[in-house]
Length: 299
Image (tube, rainbow, N blue to C red; front, side, top):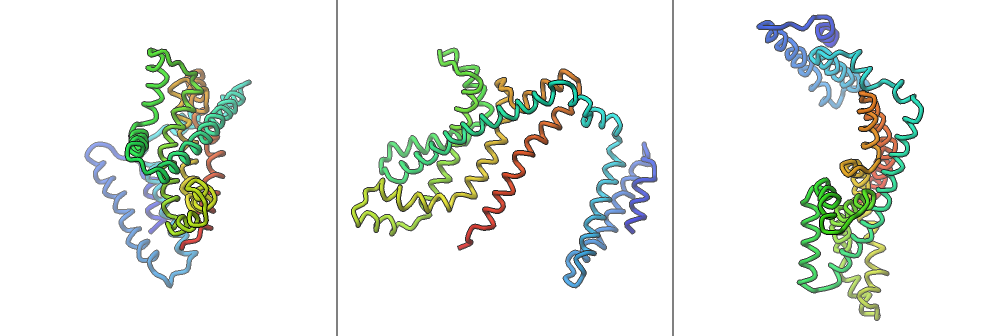
């Protein structure tokens, strides 16, 4: 069944006009018949794992063949436009891309430190201080900066604030905006970690003479940090991705450099290389986060 379907998808030319409906029906029929065999095999607990893996691989091959058949793309042209490494081998091109990576990492690190400090401060104040007026402003900050798209804040801060006399460099604008946006999310992350600590521990700490701040610093925060570590790590990955949005205010990070090179050479290969550079940074981070989540006690 698999080889018959694969042969049809690869060897039969794509039809046009009225006959295209017969061609579409035949392609759908290939997958329906294959799935009638594939699904029972996958749910059969007695079937060997190697056979299930082989059938899953066969499904992906059929999907790739169907895409190759119906995409009607000029594959040679796509290779030239997206994987033309002769463009990247030109003098200075790769150095500019690595320079963009370094700028993105700087924006990420500065905004991460500021957002973490801001998130912890807001969460601690929200938990210790019982002032409805102050808590209202903290909640308003969290709600507003989580609701407004970061790219809008970047454009407003960089383009509109100078009319009021407040002028920030592109780098400072990116760091401040990303720190404020991410700080709003981290405020909720740390607040959830603080509230997860049993209230009796705080009462016990206060009963032995510790102040509210000492109880928070010595008892609550060390435990809450361990609780929120997986969520914090996921926010960290999202923040690194958001550095790409800083390209709208002319920060020469990866995406901005890749776009400039694309315009210069009329070739999209720099964008592919930029994506690979992001993956080189983010893939180890995602693996570390996954390991942290698996190692966290479930109770």
